[in-house]
Amino acid sequence: METTNNGVQKAQFQEINIASFNNNAAVLDEHISNKDIHVKVCNIAGIAESDELKQIDCTDTNRTLWGKIKKTISVLIGHLDKAASETTLGHIKIGTGLEMQDGVAKVKIVNDLTTNDSESAMSAAMGGQLKDNFMSIKNELNKDAFIVPPLVMEKGLTLVSGGYLQIGKMTYINIQLKATSAINNIPVSYSLPIPKAGQIIPLSAFQLANGLAQRCFVHTNGDLYANIAENQRIAIAGSYVAV
Figure 1: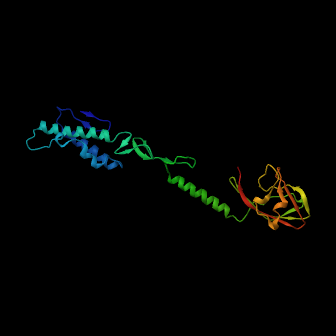
Figure 2: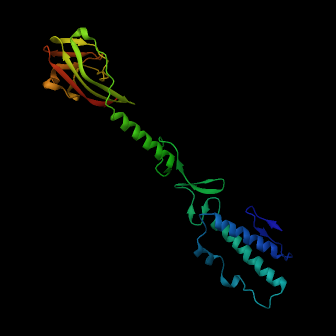
Figure 3: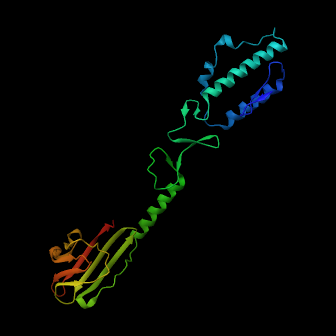
């Protein structure tokens, strides 16, 4: 008696043992019950020509009966070996979107948010993480309280209202400043996270009150240069993502 890797028993010609036939039937039944991917039923007709598989009739002796059973099992096993291998299940080839794990075909799952694989499915756990990330950002943006930055008041500016939020590399600013005295291009140090530039640039990328876009600048060191009269206000609002 020979047993294959999948538990199918192949009897020798001289062996007449219906138990092995029943054991093979049990193996096949368990396989069909537990597997999701099978050889297509329509392929069974292609196992062999009809004259190769002889019908069992009342004239068969034990010897000829067992010979026909053995022939059927042998042809079936040979066909299954061709139609269902380690790389092919039925007509579904392992590759795009599928992988083998412990002898079982499974859908390839992406379990991180950094892959560039466009042929794998994202796991439900990663969908939940995306939702959590979105809700976290949404909750931060809905906060009423901004970070209130300290300013160097001796340069003539005072904080009226507002502040800023930083979420990762994104910064959102909404602030109002007031000149306590006239400022004529005097640098004012502050802790606002406005991006520093390689040269003096106007704050036209932000929204400034009273049309003062051409009279307020950020210098290379991050200082604010202003040219405004006493009691004038500067409203700075906008957002940017740090590189």
